[in-house]
Amino acid sequence: MPKKKTATKRPLSSAKNRLEQLDKQYLWHPFTQMQDWEKEPQVIIESGKGSWLVDTRRKRYLDGISSLWVTVHGHRKKEIDQAVSRQLKKIAHSTLLGLSNVPAVLLAEKLVAIAPKGLSRVFYSDNGSTAVEVALKIAFQYWQQKGPEFQRKTGFLSLTEAYHGDTLGSVSVGGIALFHSLYRPLLFQARRIESPYCYRCKFGLTYPLCQTTCLMHAERTIQKFASVSAALVIEPLVQGAAGMLLQPPGFLKRIRDICTRNNILMIADEVATGFGRTGTMFACEQEKVVPDIMAVAKGITGGYLPLAATLTTEEIYLAFLGEHRDLRTFFHGHTYTGNPLACAAAAANIDLFRKEKTLQRLQPKIKLLAKGLAEMRKLAHVGEVRQKGFMVGIELVKSRLTKEPYVLDEKIGIRVVQECRKNGLIIRPLGNVIVLMPPLSTSPQELERMLDIVHAAIKRVTEKA
Ligand SMILES: *Cc1c(COP(=O)(O)O)cnc(C)c1O
Image (cartoon, rainbow, N blue to C red; front, top):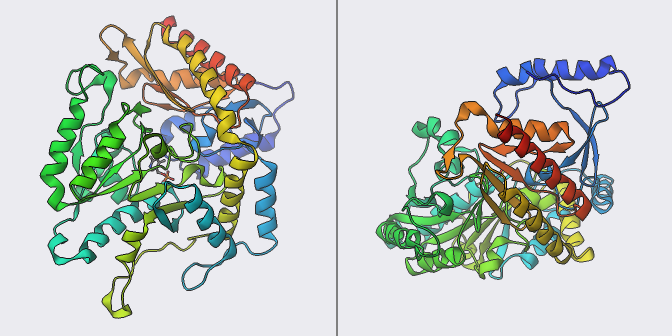
């Protein structure tokens, strides 16, 4: 194991060593082999500002993945800090069950105003997985209540390689074998359509010569199962956790049309893509698509507090109205639903988009990122570089010619990320894919620095061996 470089001249205080000890003694980290974790030196973040994170040893790092895809306007953003502390002086929490609260109401109006037109109702929960659970249950119940002729519409369609979260319903519609196969006995069955992973096309074809054969197959599958399906779930434009897989232009729009024609609902999981990440407020906008249900989370509070929302059309909402005894109520809710602190942060986050012209100012930075990525493409072991807005995946391969992947044991992604960390950039790989997803507020200089660090790290790790 390489010894960690000591980044600071001052001696480490024992308090800081103690923190690491306590971490290893008491914590269980997500998606982490704790046996490895316990053996290796670990970084403990103590503070942050803008695009920067600072650890307990005072080493500074650029935050290249927006603290796992959530930070939007940077850390310790004045307006969001103030919104949360203002709300703290009023009340930290009150329930939405049988009561309402001010920030939850005001945020709902803001969410509907920025959402694709037609989505008019907001149901809150706490994270992306629950936002998807809520979407699945609403879609299921909608058809049960719509009429006896629709009662067989209980199933779901989703894409291979999909990621919709880690709760059991979300895992059921997910398609990443590494995360999901073990739990198979606990899951309900979902019907799959092939993900348009063009670099490794399942049909062995090349875009655009393929004339999106995958869509033909998708249409056939959807038609076949439409009468027993409530909805299709899709991450619009980018399948994030799969390694930033991009859908070819027109794919999402066609899927929308196919869902409409076959009378199944379309659930857009904008948990990763929402709030500017793809260059527009929501990914669906880029194909002028309005889903029936939309799940949002990650960026909603600008990276401040856990909050999620599931938006639906008025038509779906109306199917849940009735007399108390009709039991059309949506029987779902989490204790912290509509938490006032989180809603206040989210409202401030959304206001900042207008105030700072965030999306407008993002466009030249997206181009800058593309320019830097073009350099990455020239590296010997970069198979494909995928970019949509500020979402980037760099797929490393053993051989560019055969697209042979690195095997798990080589830990290639992990090694590149460790090299970046030494040089002051925090990122996290998805298998052999190096992910970059900087806060939208990242400056051009910071972007260039991130790109330089990643370029050098890939070169060093892949060309050394
Ligand atoms: C992260 C993610 C989720 C799950 O969100 P959590 O807040 O981690 O539960 C769901 N869908 C997509 C597309 C995601 O990227």
